[in-house]
Image 1 (cartoon, helix red, strand yellow):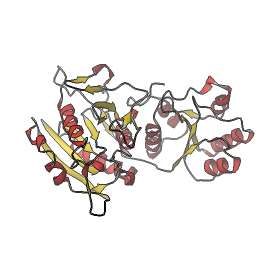
Image 2 (spheres, helix red, strand yellow):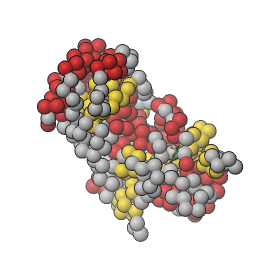
Image 3 (cartoon, protein in one colour):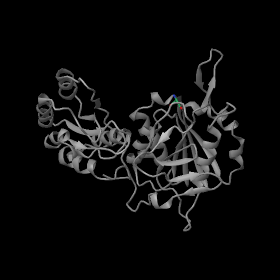
Length: 337
Ligand code: ASP
């Protein structure tokens, strides 16, 4: 078995400088801190995607670069593990799930809350178990994991279903709307019924349009702010983060602004501020207006999946009805409603 371990940066590879700041150190040092990986029953090659970055510096161009690394090496390796900062790991995992559609081999992103050189670091276990999960086979000898995942603190998640829930807890991620793919304890328990087994052909479409905006509703939101953001910001899509199951306040000007946006070809998407549950647009009168204005429901997608799917569809030139049809469809396990 051959595995490609890709390093992008993040806390897992940080070291404390004399002035107390955490700064990235090189990949060889990360590997030196976990000598156990040499004993694993697979050949591991390593690659550094770029000079190590805090993941807050990662953007759509990095996703494309990373996707190119994975695509170029797809036929040479059985599985892939990516070391990544936790802050934007869920965005990268979601973006890769669209760009590398039906990749059909394990791609597991992991990182840590404490640097790997620190005694209590969670990084060693996260790294070792990610490699083990990436090597695990089904009874028919195909990979147990055939999708893009995040592994963290004894749990394997679908990559486009997680979000970072805590900046302090070792249990940093949560997947409120989709079950966990594997639980790790004394045994590694893979819940095969929840994993993907792509049947369609692999396709690689590394295109992203970042000209979008996320607009979070708050009590007291006013017309000038809504008008400027939705109509005058030159964005191709606006993701509204609304209340509860997708509700907005009864503001006379809101439906005018949304109708104007639709006429200008600006896509408007409705996602909930609640991480769990998602949007069910017609449930309340407070959200019916959105449906009438052609606003698209993000269903139970995470905000990260909503953002990256929107960027990816726009990047591939999808607009109007075609965008709508693909956005509302479950493409790679990212939505169930
Ligand atoms: N700031 C770091 C990053 O996302 C945090 C981490 O890795 O946990 O790169």
